[in-house]
Amino acid sequence: MIDLSLKERRNLICNLITNQCKETQYGIINSLSCSYAVDAVLTQVQPYFIKSCKVDRRSYKLGYCHTISARKTYDGFLYVEGVAKSLDLKHEIYHSWNYNNKYGYIDFTFAEYANDYSYQGICIPTNILMKIAIEKKHRWGPIIPFLNSTQLNEVINYNKDLISKTENCNIL
Image 1 (spheres, rainbow, N blue to C red):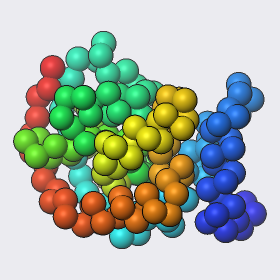
Image 2: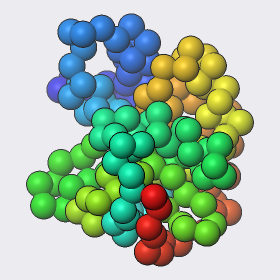
Image 3: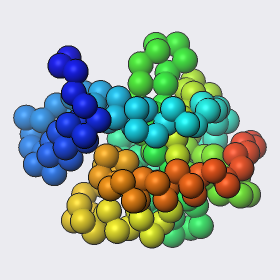
Image 4: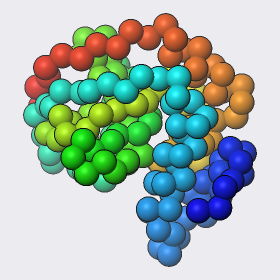
């Protein structure tokens, strides 16, 4: 891959997502998003594990992590975005999940498979999440590449005060 600067990667990701068509390969966006998020902010966050949960699979379908995680903000959860790394295959997935004080980190999308991944992500305050959603015309997908420098600094500061906790959960 050509060595792109952080700004060039951000612009490329935003253009690919905004102008996404059937020919745009998910793998390209995933790879660029993982690389950008790690270099832009995730180096400041320690990886962690999320315990597997049982969820109603009819409500939480695989492949809709950004939409599911954003919708859970209406239920009092925070939106978390970053990288999920497969423990056995060692591949990275650009992913989103949730956090709240009662349950800690919860992955509604990979619920039954969460034990198979390590997670490295940041909580994005709901006001910033919704502002970006409006700018993207509610096309859910990666948020971190769309954060401007002021928003990115606000997100980093917001996460400094957040205490991570994980507990067993059964959310149906």
